[in-house]
Picture (spheres, rainbow, N blue to C red):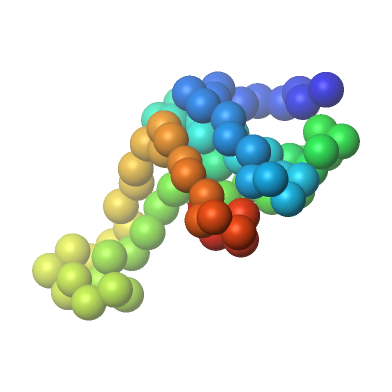
Length: 77
């Protein structure tokens, strides 16, 4: 059973035993669980766009994760 302070818009399975819950603007995170329901990681939805070559966008920017898809081998979300 998955418990905790999450507000998922969607949950997707990797096919390799991981489940990703996209927690939207309510939590600004994606939480990752293993097949036993244990929390593996909490990924924040912040990014510093200047680190990716967008110098005009300094500082952290937040999103609102709502969906995810996996590469065919389940390695990348």
